[in-house]
Length: 299
Image 1 (cartoon, helix red, strand yellow):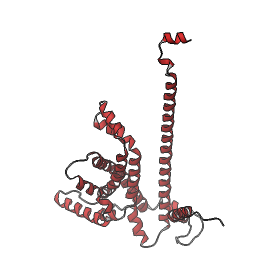
Image 2 (cartoon, rainbow, N blue to C red):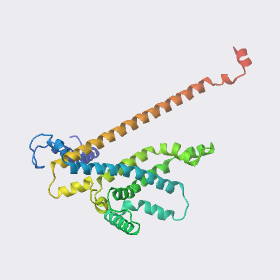
Image 3 (tube, rainbow, N blue to C red):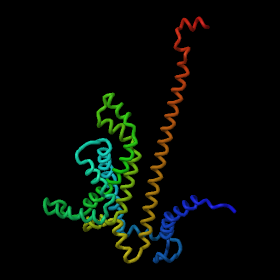
Image 4 (spheres, rainbow, N blue to C red):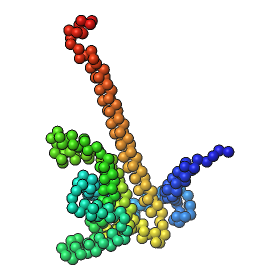
């Protein structure tokens, strides 16, 4: 009797548990029936009907816009915080600063959302800004939340870097800011991309923070879906979710493809450089360092 490979079995079950609901969602997005749980045949009418559902499409566009801005801002702020935590080792309040940076990771989103809501209300009363809650306040809240994740990811990468490369560049006369942009940033580019994609996904998925700090006309996709689910899942929601899954999958595939091609190019260039150095060492053997008269005498 053939023994069951337990690790492979658990891997298959885990993948099915994660991805099987997504496959079912995509299949039911082509359901012709208005009842989500009743199969009525294959149809594309829910995808076609999205053109007339301006409320849902507007929520999708707002969520994508906020997610893009959040990813950019979170990568910038998180990278700066990670650089301070890893490179500036001694300054007053370093422990407090590290705790504040990572606090959103362990703090419940309800507490964070309520705190930001009270902050925006107090600022509006004191300085008159923001006049009303909307896309800007959602972007600020998402950036505050996602920067902590980027800081953790980038900090782990910065601690693994070889400082001798940066020190060599500064010994050759490069300014610190030039070393940071031309040497450090390219070396931590994968972690920046990972932090940006994570921030985009967290912002696109967030419901709690957006519910606290949003205002009229600033409904995001999770808020729209949550309000619609109370009355029952509509087939249009399945269609929108399938389109988002398709877009995310394509973007992930393109990032993986270009990263793999860049890695292959880097390995090829390194291999050629090593072969060139080996050939030069062969040509510069012991005989090449002899005096020409000695070589003539030997011949």
